[in-house]
Length: 443
Image (cartoon, rainbow, N blue to C red):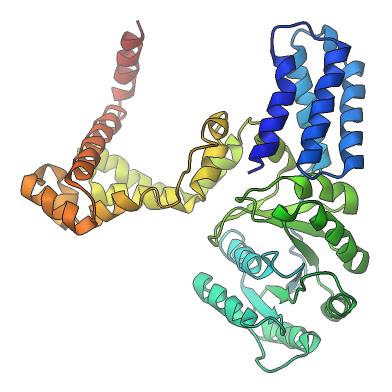
């Protein structure tokens, strides 16, 4: 996420992180490189220029040159200004209305339909809402079918009128259906085009007037950079939408859209899409994103994701098993499933301070656990419960059944054994014993 921008900003600020004397001249030179980094990220020239001008004024106004930690203060000023550029504060979704109507808008290919499903899943699971998805894209082949597949995947009803070419009528009928079936949120997926045209804008404007939505969200492919910002302005002039959704932030995103869109349309970014899975949706926090851009990680979001997957009852059961030395591969498999639900592995690494930079050239496959899962699934229930029973012949059978090698099976068994011992040590007073051991190793 924003890897290229992060690298260039890091290099630009590096001169101020050294031990050399900080002067007004190299502050100006640094900010010149910061502006260049922003322009390379496809940020609007005027916005980039104003950004560096503001940072410089604040820097000189706060006596950066004479402060005890001039480089740290400079990084903080850049971080604060990035936060402001992206909106300053987190803005939630408006769920007033009975039902709440959310109208999705944007160009074709921006990820509107997929994100409609993600938002429906988010509102269903996190906000316990009864959601209805509405298919109003009557032009794109298989668009309604795609929405139905998404709806089936997340267990949300999809309203569609196959053969009806009037999206205004469909949306009005969908509202009646939502009220009669007790739905409290209606998400309307509208048609897009390859470019802004009068016909499309008239149509979505008519739908907007007909359903009077509490939220109109503009969905934008974050990989399109400055073009996305121009499109957002065109849509906002017609719809006066409430917020922006940035999709495909897990790809090779330059960052221009995220950094420019708030300044151009004066509307907050409300959500981001960070992967293909239906769970890959996050509320947008400008301050946390600024931290990530500057390589500081995002521990708060990482903890929040972990807490979402944390089951207290399951944790108690695991704790008892560890205490009795009964932690087996079935339990390990459950832990893997929880980690996978937290999201894209590279995205998770980017949330750990410093790790994103170290792992930038490492290809972390989302199927990183695939081999481990295959090996465990090839074991018998008895073998999973008691790994010590796995002898040479059983290893050979497990390797063949999982499409792996005996060496890989041995490696997993060894790592599992080490992990089990460590978990056992962490029980009760064992944690103190392990800390003492580690201190001894350091002496």
